[in-house]
Image (cartoon, rainbow, N blue to C red):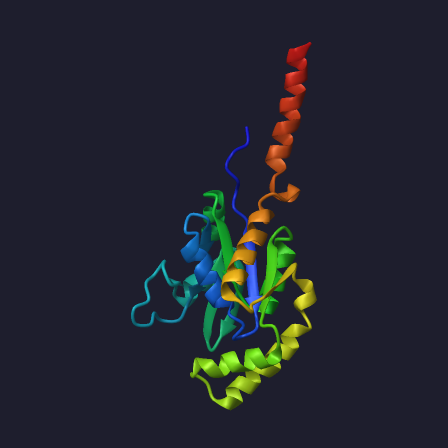
Length: 214
């Protein structure tokens, strides 16, 4: 009677430079049969090497706006003249396959998704301290000091919202962070809210068993 679980939805956010993207990539790489990374839809043009359905679902503006009207996105936003959004269909399909779907988005988007899907798991990735975050941003070697300080100031604002998340992942050691994140998501499968069908089945099974014993 105990059947394959339906997948769960996990939303991962964190400061820029905290390492959330690296953790997500490791989870998908280390556990390919367990996780599916949500693929975003966008109206921007593909960059060299990007593939439709792999990196993004590429759409025209009219198609994207039509899907907005039809409420086909979990969340969406506009950035620099283009739309970005998370298609419901892909997420539901992977969850029905038993995959745990990971959605890596910024704080405001994450909190909006949590309102729509209260049973989803919210994880916030942070370094152990501000100096480590600053050093990681410098270590990228891709941004000016002004941009780095803008990201640090943004992190200060985001810190006010961490308490809205279910768990904090302090990314000091990457291997430990990947293991801990995996354990938290795995436990989410056993929440009573994610096992309503089993609860009904076991109750009916117990009732039928007792009838048969009479």
